[in-house]
Image (cartoon, rainbow, N blue to C red; front, side, top):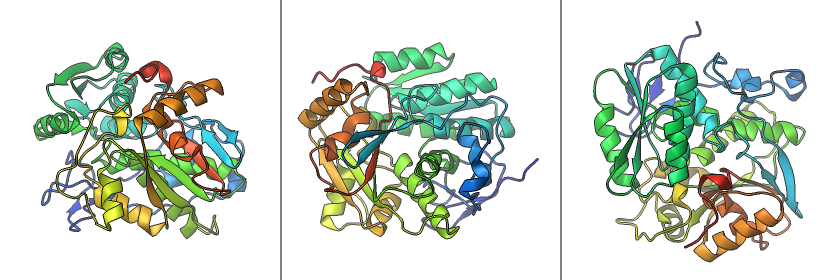
Length: 368
């Protein structure tokens, strides 16, 4: 069996040995990173491999699990001019979170805990529930009150136990972290567990392959907890270090104007969110995170790429959702945020890819 790499805290350097159920830094309680430096396979060696994210085996810290649902390898289609969309809502559970969830379930199966828990505003919980069901792992998902009924239905359908927490997404995370400290518990955190980022980075590996060994000028990514953006940044670094791309793309992070702690910090030149973030109801519930645990890493990644933060209004989200539907793509409100940010020419003539992260059937048309 392949040995697991150790984890470490990016904030203070504390190391956490492989094979434990530790979900955070024992010193600062912050999220962990993985001590893993892969050598991505060259383009020509990928032909004929399995048609899933597991085709990038050299870049992944775990072998393909027996319970894979064929996740990954989603289509890349042109949208308008120099902008294309990657249809990550065409995953087994209808969201990009499958990329990371399969990694968490594979790790949990290897560690054999008594229970698996997760917290989510919907899509991550659904993905974890589905892959735990596939892997035969007991699972409980904590969700905030007000979560889309369709997402709750999907989580329950996979056999997970639902715990609805009174309060917002932050209160749900606190409740789950308390439960995560109980012995025998594997916390399938899409924020704290670095294996999730190892899954989301395959989004960029697929782009690189589909574009013939190159990447677009810009990657535009929705950011709440930042798991897709950080995974993308990780893949870009790995491909560049291996000499497989000559130039790294610029990263553009998109937040809803109603809940934009990272955009506010970026504009202020700060390294982390500034005090208490004003929040308001938003259609983009999946990225409405007032205090992202990986905030410093996200801001550093965007600045390091020469990128920027973009914000979108509720009206822009509504219009963008209908615009995509008129192009044959029915995407949930959170998943249209990137198209809302760039559809009117914000990036000029640069080539760019936006992810369409979740299916419209999960929450319906925007109505507020």
